[in-house]
Structures are given as structure tokens and as C-alpha cells.
Length: 100
Image (tube, rainbow, N blue to C red; front, side, top):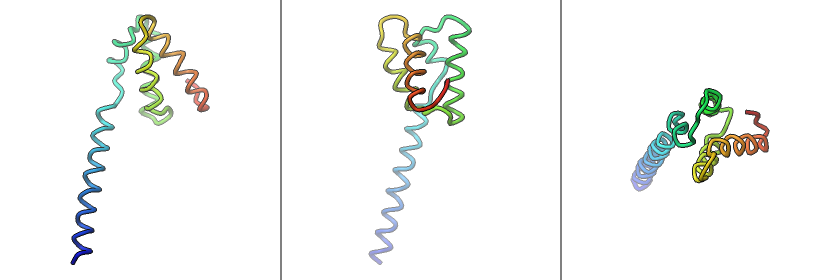
């Protein structure tokens, strides 16, 4: 009887952890339009780069954590945020063997 109760409690805890992880993943999903606005893209080429990066993340070719951390770093720059983001992401991805 005690084993059954313990197993039930563990299943409930595991379900809660999984649900929290899924909700967190959905909250941090990259949004191309938001990134363009924050980084101040001004040309079709810059917008295309953002779209490409988001597509690469969605296809599993580029880690979302790499893009998110580079985005958070670049958005704190006073000027030329997009240029910081692009160059920083290209360099960081290259260190992991990923070509953008």
C-alpha cells in the first residue's frame, strides 16, 4: 500500500515538472517580429537574417539558448544592436561548428 501511494505521488510530481518545463519553453519561444523591433532592423537583409535565425532554431539547427543569450546581450548595447547581435551570433555559432 505504501509503495502504491509513493508511486502515485512521484507520478504527480513528475507530471507537474514536465508541465512546468513545457510552459517555460513556450514562454521563451523566439519571436522574429519582437527581435526585429528590439534590435532595430532597418533593411530587408537584416530582417532576412532574423528570419533565417528563427527558422534555424525551429528546425533544430541552432540552439535557442545561443540565440536568446546573444539577443539579450545585444539588446543592452546603446547603438547598433542588430550589428552586435549578428556578429556575436555568427562568432558564437561558429565556435560550435554551426554556420549561419
